[in-house]
Image (cartoon, rainbow, N blue to C red):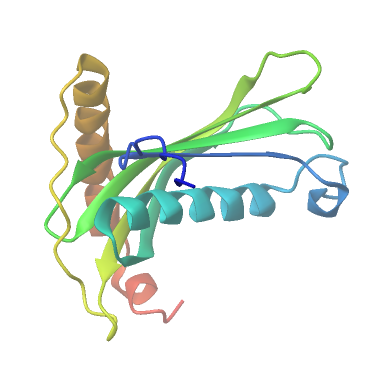
Length: 168
């Protein structure tokens, strides 16, 4: 008996789908923002680990925006895509959509950019495969990732020294 062939894996993209459970609800009756951020981090990790073949750590989450609430019982879909790479880092765009699973239409609730770094067994950064955008959409997302990186770098420069050193 032969083993069935596996579908080819797009190593640059990962999708998670599940139903929002009551354990994720905040006091307002909607999915807690912290639960959503955890899901985003997990999806970005899976995407970056598949891309790099390594354990990865989160360096930053940028430009996150909560556009609409996610309700208990909604089908939640998180799509993570590698949109740019550095020597050891991967810029992962995560888009979150949710809606009534019976209705068939999912609406965007959130999106953000997560920067992940691949590390070795000692926790030191290691090189990752380069991502080369090919489609117009991939090129736009790569430019967007670099624009957000530049903006975040500029914000870090504005941070008062005592805040950066953890004294405040």
